[in-house]
Image 1 (cartoon, rainbow, N blue to C red):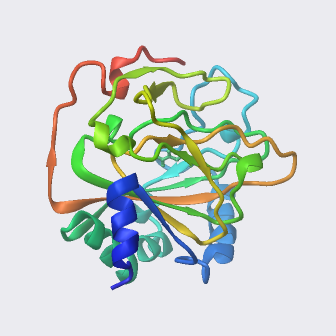
Image 2: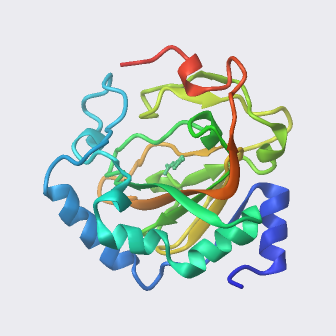
Length: 240
Ligand SMILES: O=C(O)CCC(=O)C(=O)O
């Protein structure tokens, strides 16, 4: 089994767990692979985020989505048996891949405002796997989580500051909880629950990228749900 009882306990209590080195063998090659795909030109579903900040380099290197539908290596990486098994351990069900993404985040690229993924993907349970392909620390706009937030249900959303976020909605952080930045190395894997608040800030460096491979999974028995008013991204007035 890829995950230890301690790692599973951490995930249940905090809403996330980091497993070091999960993709250490392929992270370098994945950077080359996705830069090659990006250089080929637009792909279905590309997004550079809200268009009110055209200077954001995320527009030049937009986030790719669902590459597993048209790129065989992505499908293989996202369905590695040990990855599917680890997700299955955490959701106690057979893992089903539903989404892949590649976030390039070049120097000065905006981050993604703190949110719960179930603001977007209304299926429960849901789990995200976030794999930095190079060192991810505060300077490059590392992943930020709010430990314990997954125990507070689906939270209210409000407009985000699009000068630092390429998305326009964010979650209200429950009182008493605090955000925490996660230092991670290339190829580490962060597993996080669909209700764990997370996101990132701007890449403040002039010369470092923060490329990240992101997958989302549900379980074979996961169920669709209807979010209450005020708790879905569409309930916040769109910013263009
Ligand atoms: O990579 C980031 O900065 C945030 C990604 C994220 O929030 C997500 O994949 O849901």
